[in-house]
Length: 311
Ligand SMILES: NC(=O)c1ccc[n+]([C@@H]2O[C@H](COP(=O)([O-])OP(=O)(O)OC[C@H]3O[C@@H](n4cnc5c(N)ncnc54)[C@H](O)[C@@H]3O)[C@@H](O)[C@H]2O)c1
Ligand SMILES: [Zn+2]
Image (cartoon, rainbow, N blue to C red; front, side):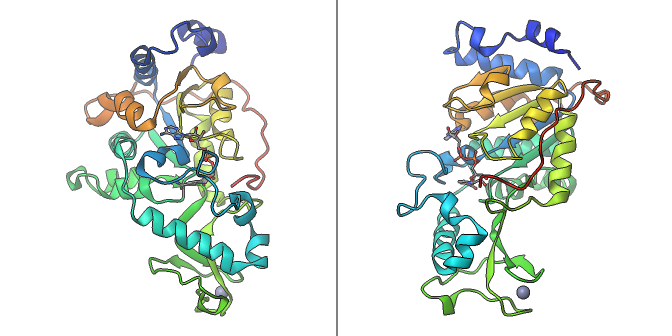
């Protein structure tokens, strides 16, 4: 692992780079970082699904009927008006059902499937990474397809869970949100069922967060794709990777809080950039450095790991 000084010599800080508008140069820089990596963490956000037609939260069009997501994606909002919250989720479930994984999802699925050193972590709840994994060539085998399944930090739009007991299940059926009486009820206790997503103020699934955290601590490269990087603790994964000596590659048309710690910043759509960066790694022959990462001697940055404060 490089120390901070070696890292800065190897890849100049993006702010110091005079030709930020030369995407090929930057794509090449990103590829070279991956070439030297032994372990890679990929952290994705809503921007990865934007080219598929799924609206992000914070870009234009992120509002739904003048409601901010932060006002609807909370346990309090559900307790106050479950019908309205379910109407929003029913709309989102219908919307993603009509969308398809894009070239970024497909390139990432193959990247993670073919290379066990890659950990794919997503904040998205739309199931498009999962569908890209399911679309993988069956000849790659089950273990490879399993590796392409993301660690979904914030749950899934296609699942439901009980608002009172521990019942949880896949729920492909259309949710009828016309009245309180038509909302889905728990088969075990009769309470209202709710979307199995992590809402603002709620904790993340511990096992998934732990696995993502471990991958961040040992990542030589962290690819940060299409996230505003303001939702915690998800965004902290990139800080953890950076604090342990990993290099950050950011793909996002706009600046984020992670841009300043990124070695390479690509200001374009993931749909163009991700397949270009990962082109070499779409075949199993393309290697990473094979030795496992030595344990980092740098202290892991102290960051809080509270429940989500933005969803
Ligand atoms: N698709 C989904 O599942 C979905 C959609 C909206 C929100 N969310 C939830 O919203 C929370 C918000 O965090 P977030 O950071 O994921 O989303 P966000 O809406 O806060 O930010 C989206 C980011 O993507 C960038 N972006 C937009 N189009 C892009 C493109 N084509 N290529 C690259 N980048 C692009 C934007 O500049 C922005 O920084 C997450 O917890 C997530 O669960 C999920
Ligand atoms: Zn129940």
